[in-house]
Amino acid sequence: MNFFNITAATLGLALTFSASAHISLKESVPAQQAMLMQSPEQLTLTFSSDIRLAKVTINNVNNQPVNFGFEPSSTPNSKFIWSLPSLEQGNYTVKWIALGDDGHKMSETFGFMVHKMEPNKKGMHGQSTAHSAHSN
Image 1: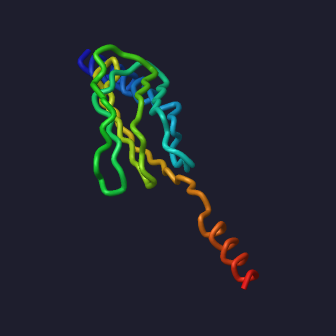
Image 2 (image 1 turned 120 degrees about the horizontal axis):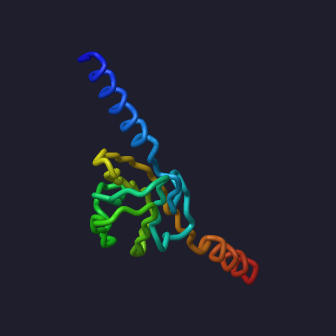
């Protein structure tokens, strides 16, 4: 009888952890490893099931945090959206920590890059230099 109870409890725990393990980040905007030509306006995290977000951080390449007004979620949801301030050119790391309905803690980290395009001043300067050289 004892063996049966232990086996049933172990199987129940395994199924619980298995169900929790299937909750994952389905989509993020910006996407993992994205190279953006301008600062993103929003951070969007979409999960495969409802979760409560305990923490979300964005850090730049110098490990300095980006303040974007994150507050832990009090109710479970599968999609979260925050407005972002203008991000400078560079690499960024997003880390999230979430709790499933069963209290199971999950976390993940991903990165993206902002590579702002600047006007080609060198090309414009080169044209005016070439023009003045022909004038002399």
